[in-house]
Image 1 (tube, helix red, strand yellow):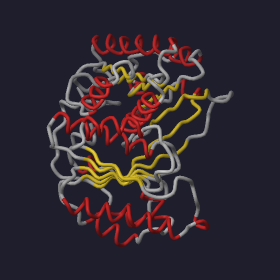
Image 2: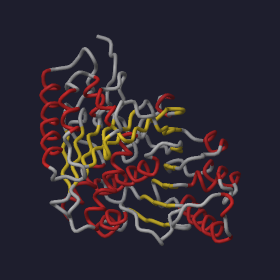
Image 3: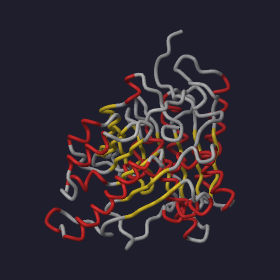
Image 4: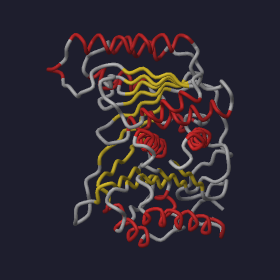
Length: 376
């Protein structure tokens, strides 16, 4: 029988590629820096699973030390437990500025960050280098585009580069192996969306990774707020083992056992429309019962419903119970919903934030395998 419709590739069915790719995430929509954090989480998880096999540099432009970010506490916790797996450098001012506000300090800080990046790329010590918000740095003219593009184009073969931020310049997009653009989608409902409901959909890469980054932010918020911010991550259509984020989440759970819960649902196989099995419905419903109870309980401040959209699209779950559960969610509970779908479910109208990820370029279209610790 032909495979048709939406299917989520599982970790066990995915081969490991050896060569690194250049990823660019840009656009006006929300989720770009969250993707960077999601990659960090997965890369650390791979390093935990395979000692010293993966090491990541998180270089954050335009995010100087004068401001505290939600994810800082979670990253620091992972650094304490696994100092050999992650390095973080922050450069720039702590506030937003435009072209007319550029100072010598801004250029010096951008150059300082880029000098660190060049050294890291040349060293061969890292498997992943994340250049968070480098796109607007280039767009503002704080760094020479030609030099950045040349350096990235000559990176070691195995190195993965993640570049994020709005305003990616054309020369960077030209050398990228993957380009996902995140566009904000207008609200479709008759009434305003409910605050705290975010949806990430579309054909481009970055939806689940962005949700993992959101989870890392929420975990950090919980650590810094005396464990009062509990987080639940539920992932549909992703049963089995082999997902690298599991190890990092498990490590955080060991340090903060009451802060984060994580549940996978589904078979360790791709589910295609017309080929659903009884176990697929059972697993989907099992996940939803956990999610529904969690939403109603008010015990969790952030709930990630990863791949809920294709689960509904495959008719493994009905829409109406989800709509009703979201309508009754506590005001201070965030719900993050991800996944592509052909027909937007009714609950899309409840979202206050909807970011659609458009696929402009993807190495998988050339037959290149996904990479453990980056893609899954």
